[in-house]
Image (cartoon, rainbow, N blue to C red; front, side, top):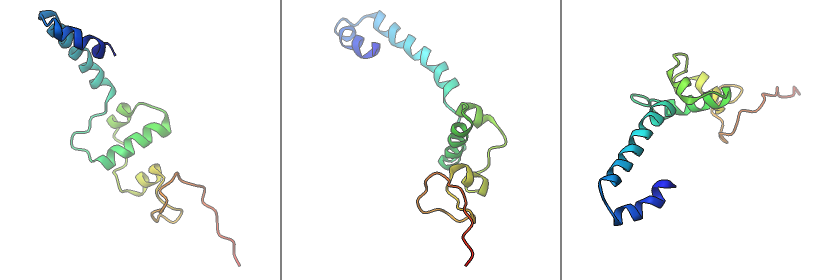
Length: 108
């Protein structure tokens, strides 16, 4: 909001102060990005989907989950269970909604 409001007048009266303000804002955002965004280098978007699902299920930061070594690889049965896309028999669910309780079919 501050950047939006200050950009117009600061460019009308551009001076050294304008560059200092934008440099300071960029310097502030670097640690925020470093601490709040998980590292994705060398990881597929499917793996990151598992990271965010685990973080949501455990109510922890995605950054903390992305640093763990016990996150199952994407496409594994464990990852599918975390994402809620596998059925009771391990088959892919068509609706891709949240996992529902498995109910034994009635015997005839």
